[in-house]
Length: 83
Image (cartoon, rainbow, N blue to C red):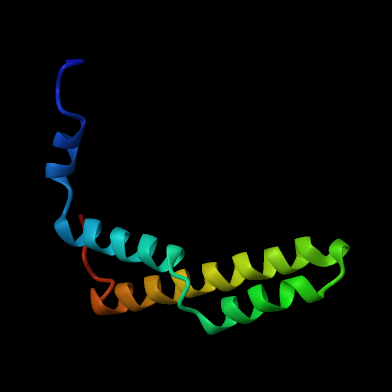
């Protein structure tokens, strides 16, 4: 019903899935990446019309890091688990 706890649905999830999701979100928000730091540092020195390209490159660098971690998690899990 409407008074039920929305977090109760999390009880049915595998804790490893939640842990992997949290790790991926952590990677996405992480600022400890040399490529992203370089692009961010270069941004003030590029022409204003190129800001969008630099911002896009930063997004791609962050996303590639998240994808790399996702592949690592998949390999650690063996990729063989079925629900």
